[in-house]
Image (cartoon, rainbow, N blue to C red):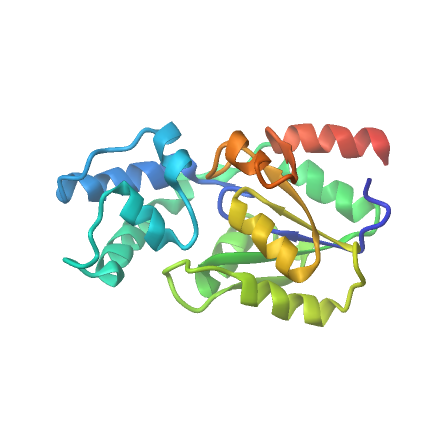
Length: 217
């Protein structure tokens, strides 16, 4: 299935970095202070969305009464303190190495802040895999479609030559906007059923995907 692709665009949070449990924990610490009901991992995944402001509203925040910018910064401050509690998803390196073997170039496009993204990718020693590492200039994760469009303009790939790998409906939407094929991994921030509603190919985890590309390439 890989022989038609020249480039793979990865999402970072939830797709490469296994940070869902940390995000739930940080969120619950914030909700506890605000007397908002706490979330299980399952409930979190059922309401998580991008832009993340809509997720906060679904969780119980009323931004007519308090500032989203303040809430978002408070969440991010704790996340940044604790982010290295997270590890990469199992089988990620095997998948990335497989892409290298067959000559497919790789990049990251993320709604995570650019300098934080750069540091994490370097810390996990992944920077040598990527031609481009693209993040936002702020912490509020409103979306990344414009980032992906800019990258696609640089790549100058034809239709069907780029594959986007993500873990959310937003990743699918980005792929459609830029004319990329898409696969979604259900081990991240949204559940399998919600991802499957997009019509995209969905895998339970990167191990499933690696098994398929190893057998067919």
